[in-house]
Length: 107
Image (cartoon, rainbow, N blue to C red; front, side, top):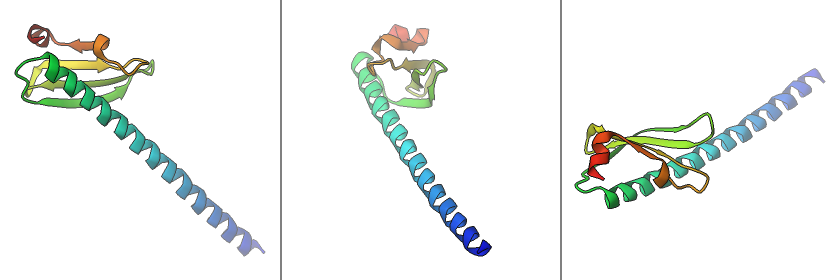
């Protein structure tokens, strides 16, 4: 009797662990898609508004303590030309694009 109980509990634990692992992986995939879409939007915005952009490097994705997603990066392999795009409720970043003084001169 005790052996059956242990086997049943083990099977339940394995099934529950598999379920929670799958949910975690789905959430991670959803986050990755979100960041990729936002990176593409930021690239498009930068290429449209700044001349002579050869490359854009994204260095950090994070969510601030207030729950605002931020993407940090720089252009043309020059860390002096950094930007920090904060996304608001409407998934826009144009009003919240922090940038270095050097990058501001190029806009």
